[in-house]
Image 1: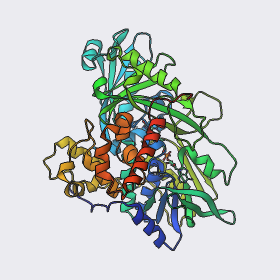
Image 2: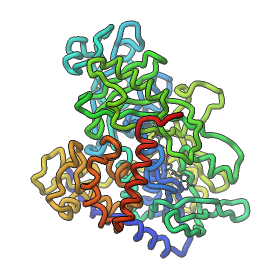
Image 3: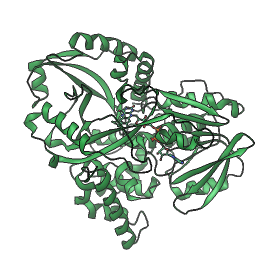
Amino acid sequence: MTTNVAPPTSPNTRAANLEGLAQRTRPWDVLVVGGGITGAGVAREAARRGLAVLLVEQRDFAWGTSSRSSKMVHGGLRYLAQGDVKLTRDALRERERLLREAPTLVTRTGYFWNHRKGQSPGRIALGLALELYDRMAGIRDHHFVPRREYLERVPGLNPEGLQGATYFTDSIVDDARLVLRVLDEARADGALAINYMRVTGLLQDGPRVAGARIEDVVSGASFEVPARVVINATGAWADGLRGQLVRETKVRPLRGSHLVFARERLPLNEVVGFLHRKDKRPVFVYPWGGATVVGTTDLDHRAPLSDEPRITEEELAYLLGGVQREFPEAGLGREDVLSTWAGVRPVVASGKGISPSKERRDHVVWDDRGLITVTGGKLTTFRSIALDALAKAAPHVPGLDARDDRAPTFRKVDTKLESTLPQPVLDRLVGRYGPLAARFLAEMPTSELVPVGETDTLVADLRWAARHEAVVRLEDLLLRRTRLGIVLRDGGSAHAELIRRTVQAELGLSDEAYAAAWSAYLQLVRSSYGLPTAGS
Ligand SMILES: Cc1cc2nc3c(=O)[nH]c(=O)nc-3n(C[C@H](O)[C@H](O)[C@H](O)COP(=O)(O)OP(=O)(O)OC[C@H]3O[C@@H](n4cnc5c(N)ncnc54)[C@H](O)[C@@H]3O)c2cc1C
């Protein structure tokens, strides 16, 4: 339990944020473009240093890759196997830090890695790698699980050639909520973050970048925002903004897709990892958000980046084939898939034409005359990525000291909430809302502190988000503030009336406007978060 409690941050509305923008007459110190984890991390670190920070996101916070990851805060054993010790060490250090600072948002989770006859890495090689992995994290949390015990702990596994498993721990997060929590910390230190604001061009003062032209996607208004430095944290879109200054393609967009099943169809308490027999890539099956997820793929993404990424037939067959083979007793078929999601990794291309899975995953930072581009990397390492970006920005911002002072990302939160709700529910609220959890409980109707169907999402989560979390479209509410659109079949349409009753008035929508919003949401979910559509 922690005590030293910081004052709660005020809730977040888009109207209040727009007012904050209109009030600023002087140039911003830092303009961050992109509201994913990278942009949020930069805004958080810059605001903590007393700088005037504006972050703009063209769609919704975490709309890009940062709500579509595999949701693991991890060191990345795979990177260690590829010899990338530095990336693994940095990621493990950040993982441990996040577990300390936000333990109910980022949760330590058990992983089993299957050993089957003839497959590598074998038990001894993996044990040695984990010795190093755990030592770099300062923990000791791995052991071999013999076959019989493993089959008891994970019933339904294919016993063919199974020799046992290696158990270790990493962690899992709700990626979109992580972005929101980091943005909330940035706002607590004075940063302004506005969604549905697109940067349409860069302002220049001679050769130097001096701000950006921004379009308010909701109202259609355009205006100029001067800034000492512009940080291009647009992930897979980074070449687009940078293209105004430099003609160079750096990002190799790689798509990864996932399948979601109802927990009762494949109940798991720990992650199970295995080598896919088709191409010997690691695939994970894991519990997340009350459902079971299978992922991921790793393919060149050739569709336009302006379109929502979606799973293809080929990826569905690959992931389904993998999980059917590992868990034959579950009898899973495509009709069991509740939903899917696909994300695009902003991987910095080596230019060597190597296979997607062999490309390095670390981040890169460039300074093009005051446009600092930061791309690549991982969800897990957002803090160190932010520090590197600020170090590159320092020459443009007098007095900016970007050295790592090891200050926490998250303020301490009072975890002793006064409520009769079960402890796991309270833990979840602290993880999601941080310092605002107590206010959430005080403000939300008791009758709504109940789950939506079989999920762990409370009805009150919907009301709170609609009221306080800058929701513009229903997809913001149902795909990112909450994840109901992912963990329920057909975007949660079985609960459509409950959702409408809870949020329509909060969003200030007439019956007609709400009906149109719901139909746009369902169309999006069916085209991009469901089974592949014909021809894909
Ligand atoms: C399938 C998959 C699985 C992954 N799994 C993991 C994992 O388990 N663990 C892990 O640590 N990492 C994982 N990653 C990597 C991680 O998700 C990404 O590195 C990270 O989310 C990238 O964040 P970002 O902020 O750089 O990009 P994004 O989250 O994409 O954010 C960039 C934002 O910029 C916005 N933008 C673009 N152009 C403009 C503009 N002109 N004006 C305003 N805004 C603009 C976009 O709308 C977007 O929201 C995974 C990635 C994928 C694809």
